[in-house]
Image (cartoon, rainbow, N blue to C red; front, side, top):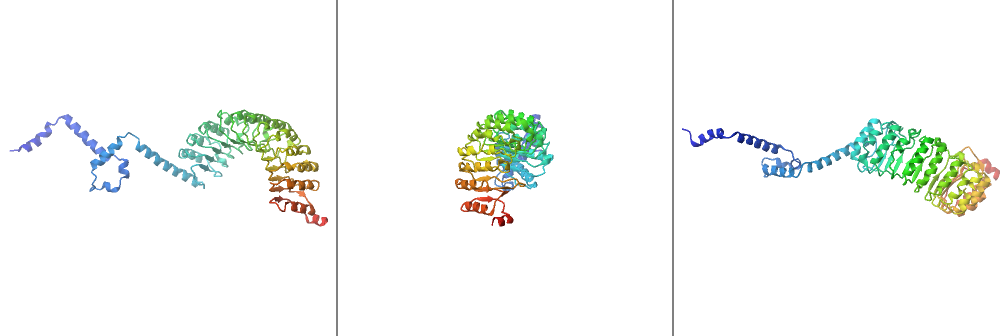
Length: 465
């Protein structure tokens, strides 16, 4: 005869409803899932918590995990994933930079002379999300980079704090310029752009970049040295300058193909009132260009550095700039070497010196201008007393030239005591007798001046004796 308990146990399952069976299965599955669910608490909990003899019940751990999960999906876990991702990403950045022989830095990335390939550029683009603090990126002197810049520029939104971008001598193409132009809106804080020594920037391609310039760009420096800019590019640049009101430096050196187009650029300088440095070396400046430049310099009172060197066709045209030079009271550096200066030109300079207009000038380079003539040098030194702040003066001749310094040396010796700040005096290829050299050395003996001067020939010294 069965006991009551045995009867109850036997009859119990038969009396359960289908709903009870379903609910029981759900409960068992839920309990099993919660026990197996990985949580951040378990991942970082000390190993003792997994001990079977631990004083912390498993139910409490589950409840704690459930409490954290109930705070909302993706809160703690997403932050942790982001942090871990950043660490892993920076590790990738370090590995990429170090394999190129460079030092990783969160704010400055210099990969010059690394023989970067298109594949490297693609990889670099994927690393930009982990360089959110980047301010300087220099990819210059990588010849194999040309044609692949878009793989990088499509990721520029991740480096919105970028201030300096250098891609000089990278064989950039028109497609690269388009890609760069389209990416400029992603880096609104950009202050310096260097595209120098890229022939592909010229030849009428500059508009590919200029057409994408924002209406009020924060760009302060634009370097376009030896880019083979044509007259069409000069027109494009002239139209772009009004979009660069913050521009402080413009370097167009080495772009002789601009020719007459340079006048258009010069005429647009009135739109860059904050310009401090203007470099037009080897740009094909002629007398007409200088006349127009003289007019525009009046609108640039803050100009500090002016480079007009290596423009042989400009000789005889500097006299038209006399009035403008007198207004450049902040000018610190004036470079006019190898410009075929005439006596009349050097007189566009003596007048300005006498008026004290160049009193802030620290560097004056008039070298490789043997065409000035003896009378011209005498006049220049006679008015040099106004150059109170001048530290460096270079009037050397070309390596193949040699002229006597006798006609103007007395004027220089008279001027030296009135140049209290002079620290370097270059007189190379000028011929001095031994007596003249002694006088010059004596005038500088008690002053900390570096004299660059050729040695007196032994035969000449013997004759003088």
